[in-house]
Length: 422
Image 1: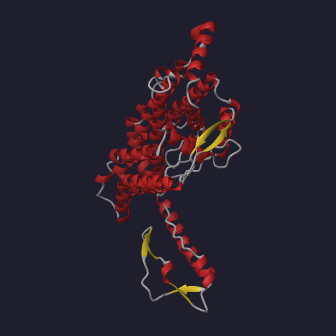
Image 2: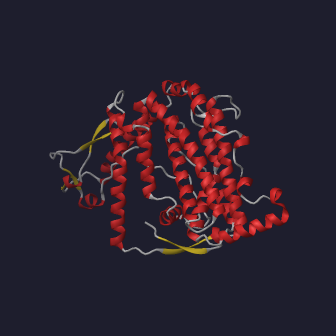
């Protein structure tokens, strides 16, 4: 991630000050380049000062240099040598990744998990739906909103498949390529497609959701798209997807626990969410294996890709989610998930720790450049940093004595939920 140096300019501008060039200047490394940073304590007031615009221009030059370094870094991941690593992995994908897909005949389908009139007959179907609605009535609105967010995320599958097909060396260029990579993408997409279907069907049968508003949210999310940065690098794409698959497994698993027999007693929803979570764990295993293989083949580039994605923070694909009314809906959804316990900062931290262990990042040594070693150390230290940040955020919240606000959610017929925004 590009580090951005910010300087507080207003005071210097008002006093017409200029830097004291006799003072020692701190510096830092930005993508391998030592950059002198100007400290605000080094400004000395003078009658004829360097203008604020000149200072800002210098800062812009530094930022431009950083961007050039970053662009060069990203281009390196699309070099023939890097892409050849992925091409050479294809026999390994055939043997170690494709077997994680289930045959269609052995895979569950939404009709297996919810009332099916073809199996139950008319009266049996209506009775089963009545029981489902009765159980669903006990699920709190807070969990319902989180369920919608999870379902909308799953329904945006077309965006994710098209994103993977843009990734160099692994994409399904014709839509029917016979490569192992292309067959994996199609098979994974076919299995993922059932997740949104079964969650959508449960929500429809439960009667607790304004399905027209939920469907509009899906429509908006797919229409808005999702930009994964960088867009075409297989290294970064697989790191992102490995993280996301585990995150969705955790979110669905937590939801199953909270609504199940030991929670709010909705066995049908618990079964649906638990089944989806199991699928996500299998998919996570595939992408985790792929990143492990990349780290074996190209440890320096691999660990730098992991560090870059984690420095930026792995945002959920739901980040552009919209109800057509609130600009801060994603922030609300994140806060509600934290409150409900479906996906928390602690979960995020645990995912980082898990992947660090799975990828044996601490053991990486041979073949690492200076940047690679710094990336390795950053990744290994990140969980503890996240915990400290969480503690400080909690302390700030206590001091600020913030109170939750009540907001209407159109997905649940404008019933209000309380949310504590940061």
